[in-house]
Length: 323
Image (cartoon, rainbow, N blue to C red; front, side, top):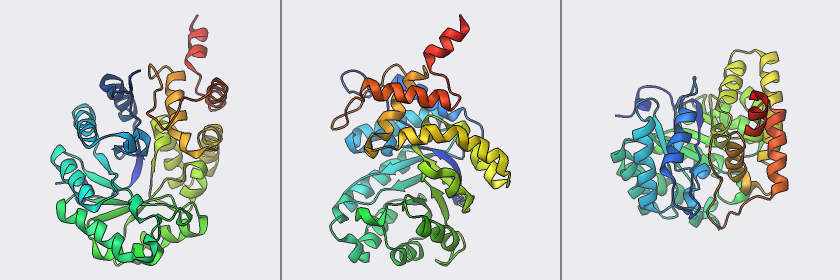
């Protein structure tokens, strides 16, 4: 039974990265180390694997299964693991969900199918059927990944309410609506029980995280947590405590990295996070699978400057200081 059947699916939940070797095969040893580094952070509620941050779009079913298995082996006794469900077809999503439950995941982060991008918002029964198909395959709690409406993959508010009403295993949404008014409506309405029961809003507005948390989101799920989990925990706790000066001071450290991670092209955000782990001496290399490409030396240098501005000295600076 999932731990989230007896407690809310809330709090600070980093989404970890996935390490590859020079041949673009999964580097299990480096991936395990990364997971250990993140999981050692006090104050986390769970960790997400097989998400955007781990390039799930470029991983086969067998690779996703192996990723979850070695992550469970490495950290499953310390923290609940949430497994991403990234599939264009509902039957494939259900197969992934069954695999995740068998491997020991505690919850599922369900991505919107790309197959719904050309007008799926006009057919709410498509979204309902997708989630019901997954729910029929597993008892695990689910997180709805809410995309921006402009993307064509965001669920209209009324559709989201129906999904929560009709699929009891939906326990939270990962809100990337990228619309401050809609985000606040999600927080007030969904956490307030407008759908007939309360569900958690996990913000993933990491480019404006303090503002988002101040609206009242009861958690966050973010790839940036793969680099700065301790800062995200500290910010979340300060906002929840109503300690504005402390929250502002922490946000001052997060700001330069948010500006560096989420600049256009947005799709390079996790690529940039990998490079930061190398700069910090936490990973041996930053390899991504195509169509993602290696960053330029100029951009990597800017990332080093952002780390320094955040008070996280790159590895060479740490080495110089020790000499």
